[in-house]
Every structure is written in structure tokens, then in C-alpha cells.
Length: 316
Length: 302
View (tube, each protein chain N blue to C red):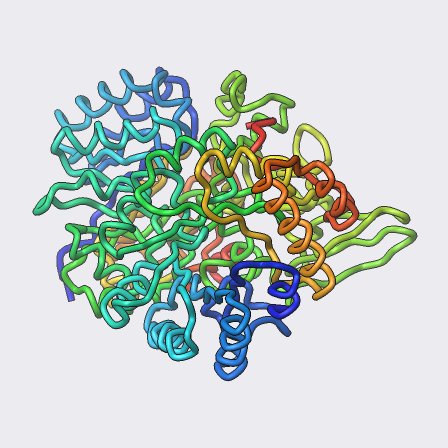
């Protein structure tokens, strides 16, 4: 997967270790220490970078595992560490002063004031922006932020502020902040009755699909629920973020890097999305339009539909 | 172990109540003998703040005159210029404040102290130690934390006062968008303050009718109501010195009285559950997080 992304034109690839220290702690994803070192070597041969995410919040009484993850990333030759927890940032600052630090979206740094705090206290060099900001807000923030800014442009879309959501643990006991997972697979089950399919999380019905409806992974906040106003999607209909049309604006605003969600995806997906964005960015560099590249990806969207998300303020 | 009695505090009002209702509420709290400290301030939505500011200032005055300590609590998701300025304005007043977003930290002067609210992502003892280094004297742990996790923080930072979120619907998620307004087919910018119609939040059920969540403006909460089902000894062992009660409509004075009796050892956790006034329980009692389980697990099962 990392190799596919680099071969398709990614400048950097972010990844995590195979444990609860990263926010995509799903079975079958992520790297062992040896795989990470091999991947860094592969990337460096091709002038690409590897950014290692140790971006969950260390478990109280067990913070050593997160410290070891930082040490492992450094030993593997990682080009930067992506972190959110003050404990992880402080350890990296104190023990690995040469290590480049990126602030994870899980840190929920929504404002220049928050970014300034992380820059001043931990030497953070880049911040990954939460997906709650509009393009205008991104531009204003880049102007004020004392560090580089990276923005998500393609992939799943959290409807909540990242790092500020405990819906999953309320139902299942596990959540992004506590354990690096949202709507964890072991809590998911499906019921089929009549023609309908009911996905359940910890036994709770979180949606109901009639025959012929497109189904995706049953993420709690993407489901349908019931209120006094009737039944329907509570937070957002299942759509994917595709901000390719805003690349030009993001670039003009001073955004330094754009991020494509690649984990929990297949190699073919990663290669196609990376290649399309590589093409679009190169087109911008030549002073051309990105339009020809925008249509390349529409069939990859969750539920077949996509959105520019909060970047275009629609119903804030 | 701290042997002073557990104190009771009233957390910031998370719901959007009309100014008059809010003032009536704080007048009754001013008369309640069980509460030592009250947090004020609009922490959920920056749009609500200007409408309620005068009433909040008046409430502070009433509470302080009756001997309660008032602590101002800052916005939990400040994005707009106004929301950001609001935190900085509170910091500049020089009184003790509760920070609910990391963006407030640069405004804290060296040597000044602050309270860290439950919206900060402090999940372990090393992160807590970082805040202590920056002047944090009291922490209301994130609601996801178990009592065991809180005990680990206490062991490493014994000087840090710990105040446990002990009653009320749990604040679970924050969003830049208002799902409450969206449900009424309104945009946040023209929301007509529809969240005011639901003084304890808008109930959300599964398609099969199971109670689950509650919408409160840009905040999503639990439908279940957090209550304590552990012993006072367990709380003390974890280093907890204060119990935070989150305001709800209904007989909140009755909630205060029941928690006061629990904290004083007059009743145990089962007694507490039995004495809580039903008018203050807009959902079933839950307590799973404290045991490291799913937050919605019913209270009294441990």
C-alpha cells in the first residue's frame, strides 16, 4: 500500500504501528517495527518521506507503549512523527530533539491560538487541520499559524471535530481517543429480516437498509436514527470528502501539503487517488486547471456520493 | 488520602435556557447549602453567548453574594474570532478560569493557575503533568476516563485536585456544524436558536426505539444520565476531591441534596440512585465509563 502510493506520486506517506498507538487500529492494517524500517528504506530510495502516526492518547498507567512507539519510529528512520497527546509530544521533544513533529488532526487544533501553543511548547512544525473548517477559515488560519499547514482533501469525513468525539465508546467502550478505533469491528453485527439489513453496534440498531440500498462500513455517526422530527440521517448522509476542486484555493491560501486518507483502503484505491491528485497538483504548477482530474475519482466515494465537506460552508 | 469531605460543584450549564429561566435556576442554587463552587460561562455555542451574557454576570453576582465560589468556563470549540476572544477576555479578568480548549493556554500568564475542563484531551498522567507544569491546579477528567485511569493520574500528580463529572447527560461530541438546527432544516447561521426548545437536549433513539443520544446544539450528548455507582472510598482512593453535577431542568436541588448525603456517607450508591428525583433524570442512569466499560452501561450493574 505504501509502495503503491509512492509509485503513484505521493511525496510522503503516513502510517502507523500495528497497535493502539495509532488512530487506525484496525485488524490487518499498519506495520511491525521491521516492516516500518523496510518501508522507510523503500521510500527514501525514491525520495519520498514516511510520517509515522503515534496519534492516540496514551492509556493512563501504560504510557510506556506510546514512548516505545516513538522510539520505534525514530529507529526506523521516520521523517516525522504525527502526534496528538501532550504526553507523546513531550516525550518526543525531550528524548528525540531532532525529530520533526507534526500535530495530528486528533489534537483538534482549530485555531491559531491552539497551534501557537503546540509550536511554542513542543516545537511542532506542521499542523494537520481538522475537517470542521471552511475554506475561508483555513485561509485565515494559515495566515495566522506560525507553522506549516496540511489539509485533508480526500477520503472519509468525520462529522464531529476529530479528537472530540466519544460516541463510539459510549456504545462500545472503545473510541478513537481511548483505543484508536471508531465503531470497532468486534462490536459490529448484521441482522437480516425480510429484505432489510440492520447493522448493529454493540447490539444497537444504527441503521436499516432496504433491499437495493448501498451499504458501507457501519460507522455510528453515519447511521439513521429516530427523533421527534422523524427518522433519518442524524448527522450526515454517508458521503466522502473530495476537495480536489478546492486545491487551487488551498494552495493560494498557503496550505503546504494535502492529505489523502489511505489506510483501511486497497492498493488500487490508493494508487488511483494518489495519481489523480499528483496529476491535479502538477497541472496547477503548470498553471492549468484541475477539472480533468476531478472526474477520475467520483466512483470511489462512499455511498457513491462525495462532497467538498466543511470547506464549502453548506449547512454550518 | 485527603480526608476533607468531598465537595460538590455545579458544572457549567450546557443547555440553552432562556435568560429568565437561567437566573431562576441560579437563584435556587445560591440557596442550596450543598454546593461549594459553581462554573458559569457558555461552553457549547458561541452564538448563544451574547444573548446570555448579562444574565450570567448577574448569576455570578447572586452566587458570590451567597458565598459560592464562581469559576468561569471557556468555550469548548472556539473557531470564530468572537469565540476565541471570549476565552481570552475571561482569562484577562484575572479570576480562576476553566479551560475547555487548548487554545486558551497561551493566554495563561506564567505563575497563574487554571482548571482543566472535561473537554481537554488529558487521558494519562504524563499529559496531566504537562498541564500541571503550565499552571493547572484542578482537573475535571474527560468523561471517557475510568476511575482506574483517574487513579493513575492521581498517583503521578498527587497535588492536582480532581473533580469528577458525576451527574448529568454526558457531553460526548462536538462539531463545527449544528445537527440540532439541521434536524429542523435550518443552517447554523440562521438557526433561530431552536436548541432552546429542548432544555435537557433533544432525545435520539435507534430505529428500534432504544434511547441512545441527545442533541444539544453543536454538542451531542448521551441520552443516559451519568450517576455514581461506586463508593466514596473508591472515589477517595482515585484522588477525587469534588463531584461535579451538571445542570438539568427539574428538581436540581433534590439532586444536590442526594449527592450531599452520598458524599457525607449518609447513603451508599444504591441509596443515591433511589433518592435522585425522577424529574431530573431525562434518561436512564448510566455509569459504564467509570468501570472502563461502554459509557451507556446501566448504573448499578458493577
